[in-house]
Amino acid sequence: MISSNSLATGEVLGKSYGFQVRPAVSARDSIQDLVAQGKIVGEWNENFKIYALPEMLKQRPPKWIKEEPFKGVLQVDAIKNIWQAMDYFGEGELDVLITPENSFLFPQEGRSLLEGIRGILENRKDPTTGAPTLGTDFNFESDDPFLNNLQGKLLTLKGNISEAGKAFGKALALLPEYSEPYANLGTLLWQLGQQKEAFVLFVEALLRNPYNVAAQLNFFDAGRETENFDGMIKVVEKILEMDPECLEFYPILAFSYHRSGQAGKAIDILNNFLAKYPQEEEARLLLEHIKSHLQ
Image (tube, rainbow, N blue to C red; front, side):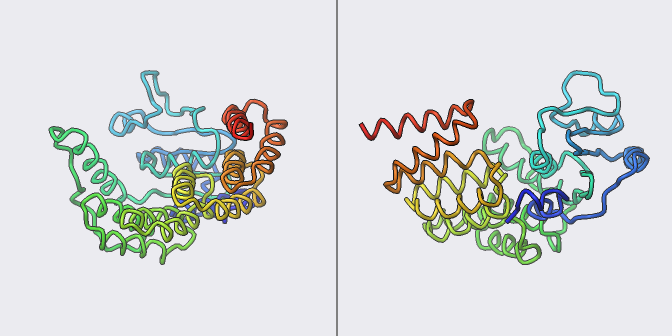
């Protein structure tokens, strides 16, 4: 599992997102060299910046670039931490992500797979779009865990569940620290009616990357559906022991205690949490809800 200490280097976090870790590009000249080669570069160092040639952003405009003039560098205030930077990098809009200690290269073939995934989803929303459903230049034989996971997602959308499972399994064999393939395998099992087995995989995904919103939602929804509240308590307490700053997990912990019949424990957790973070409205509403059930 990721801990707050291990995040200091970004290495464990990078592996949890499926990316190969490389030495950091530390010198400013190196970033400028990458930009001169036509790369779109993201840099996380207490804040997030995008570097690129203006003409490259005309070809591949990141969603953060609006109508404002772009002069080669842009600070993106919407990305507030390294986990959000990694999520954004995984969407394929950057070529390189640089942190103070590590750098990550986005696999070029990944854009072909992302294009195929997005094409299928767009065509499902509107069949008249005619969006491409698979890049023509992708070689499915790869030892890159990120690419195998994307391949599995594409195969899932195409309805080839057996081959999708194999692709997710290969991604995990190549990089067991990679979080998302566990969740994707869990989703397949959930659809096949194997909910308990799916929940175990959602737990594995969450423990490898508790900061990922999709992993949090899968875990919470599956735990609630299977009513495995004791299991949820054990997992969330383990996460908070590793990183007490995972604030979104305190309401989940309180909810789990409440549903397991321990309303008093849930109320104590929320009272202590709100004493430190009085602005957390979700926790306050949950506290009111639990108290109302005791009246």
